[in-house]
Length: 103
Image 1 (cartoon, rainbow, N blue to C red):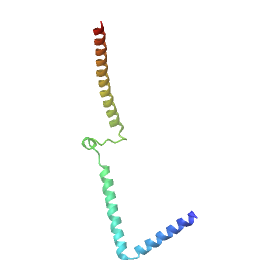
Image 2 (image 1 turned 30 degrees about the vertical axis):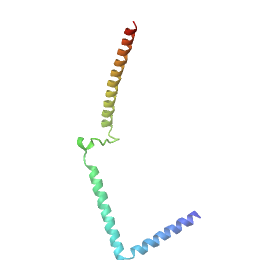
Image 3 (image 1 turned 180 degrees about the horizontal axis):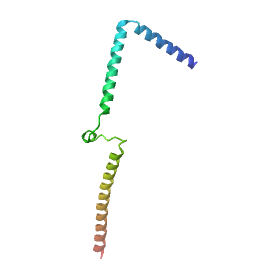
Image 4 (image 1 turned 60 degrees about the horizontal axis):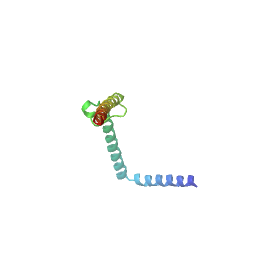
């Protein structure tokens, strides 16, 4: 039953397309729309091909740029390491001050 429904749907679509494209005016409209779409797609593809400079990558990281991702990862680890050292130093200082106050 599902196969016959698909066949009927395809036949209906084909009949509708034939009825629409039977007029010269509709064929011309469809051709203009297709050419406009093709031009837009081609210009988009060309814009994606240019080499990205450092200024175009700012705030827009590429997940497949492993060198950049490694650099960001190392930078993140440096700040975490700095924070941990500062927090541990404060913890050690407060612990030693507590011990001195108790004595």
